[in-house]
Length: 295
Length: 295
Image (cartoon, rainbow over all chains, first blue to last red; front, top):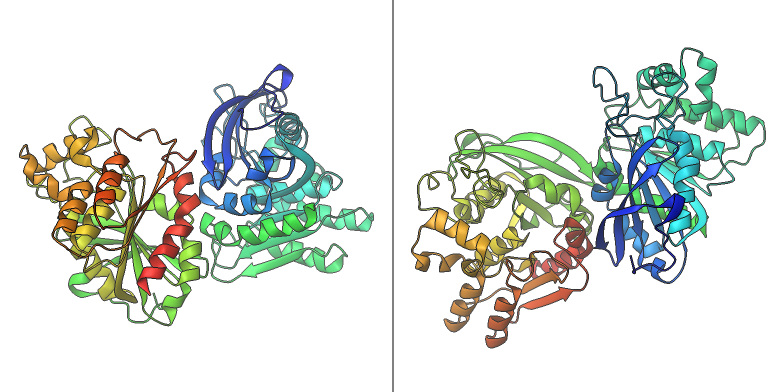
């Protein structure tokens, strides 16, 4: 890692560099570290643009959807080209705790357990020991990468589907930490869809009042009514998406957005589905949106 | 497929549309057809740019490397963005015959048999019945897609590693059919590397004189000395590529290129490896190169 100045690989924030590839003049990196929050070893990917050789750069955090790891967005979205142009780092975590000791859905379902952490802090057993993805994304991962890589503390957050839910919830609840929020086909109202009900009842228990802190539609209304700052928000939703409208419930967020002063820009993209081809088609606009707010 | 005018899905060129996704305003398509040349069902992918809704467009054929299918380039290279901008279709075949009746390397090696057709017409048993990838790429596939999709007969050809070898060999031997050739990290002198010796002895037998028709370095020299037309050629090679120089033998082609009037542009890209991050970083330049020759 002589490539970067100021990188630290020892002490409590020790991380192992597993892979390094040149891409668009910058570096696509993959790390493994021991997460104290998640109680397991975690992989994550980082793209550092060429500008990071000379100066600290801001970062867009990308949260992926159900079944993904850090590698889906890294290999399929084409985001590095734009990030290299704009001088933005990409921080790409996994979607759940991982490893032999981490419990999975007893039936191996794709929408709960491994690959499906839903970016919450679980309170129920046996999930609570490891499934603390909210704190991992908000606190532990930024501390780690900002201490070891040439990053400013300027952050934006984005994601897809379950990760779009995560980006909206984390961005809205921590508006002092993120300068902008975007999402592709996010689950905007999980307390009212099948995916969300299954995940939240499993991780958080039956008291639905505990679910509301992880629901973007609820949060947008609450934060607006309490005059909290709400960062600029951009959302794209394909109208040929298999999961629209039942699981994603875009209309619920649009209704609240129209009632409030939040001013989120929520766009339908005709003919696009839920795949990475949709993300690849619009990631350039999202990164330009974040760049305009990060500078 | 009402999206395109003039598409034919019946008769001897019948093809099944397996998947269709909107991407960059165009369509990423995946087809299955019964190949008479390969004696098996074959999948291939096509990107049609938005311009194909209104008019016939030229095509770049992409040949992938060892272990790949049509899906690697489709999902990882980010080529659709540029192709949509330039009004170029992408035709992306598999790398070998496939299916239960198709023999594989007895040890399941990655560099022979399934996923490793090397774009030759096999003459040895048991390979000859199915492993006819040269004729499939040169004749059957173009006939099929040009009869059923809104394509002109303007073609360029490109590829990666084993597919870069295929693009160079097929383009050089059929200069009347391809207006330009490009390659990423191609195997340029397979008769003198381990991958090529294994593949050619297996598919073509021990008579090394039969190997020379599939060796880009040999072909470039022969065609130059016989004053054949040689299409414009662009090659990129990463200098941090694990397979350089032993398997790829870039220097052999450079030596011949320097002796002849071929004028191939062969570039070393510092720090890049053999991965799709390398391809993604330079595919825009390759497609612009092809577009300038296709128009």
